[in-house]
Length: 205
Image (cartoon, rainbow, N blue to C red; front, side, top):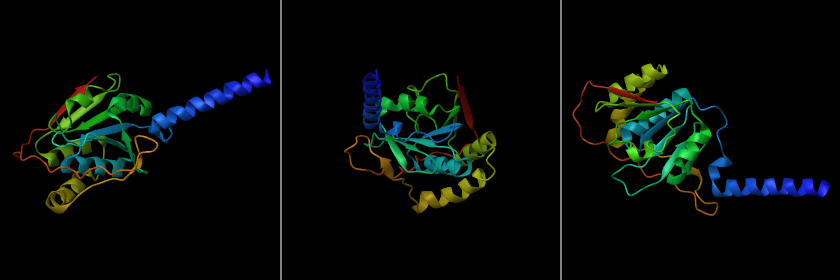
């Protein structure tokens, strides 16, 4: 009987080890409840907003590849540790694993490719906020999330960022156990667009 229990325990340990090797984020899962998962594309304006939301709210964001880029990597960026690369075919599994109370999408389909949003579990409320005027979007998100400094900080930093800034995050957990650590590509410059006062909020259930 004792030998049987030992064999079962060993089998469970081997299965857990195999899972963490195949899916690295299992071993480095969330340390706390994720209230809001911010999702956006790898563009300067949208990525800056995701970083500032995280700085003020301590919530993670998911960085999706830009449509114009050859890079297809997806990054999960937690507030107090390095980013984790997520395979596209495991995206929904990962989002369900961290189980956010809601998903906040920054930008329309030209910033956040629809094919990624279509993968998300529809039991998780999804709110999408977008406008061609990112300063207005920052004000809307600040009100929505009750973030006191977001609007002011965003307007001040965005001008410098578009002129000469860059953003990157190192990756701590590669896709495969033997793969080298990588860094996400620099954020792509924003598309030219006229300023508008319209801010659109789509809520999907």
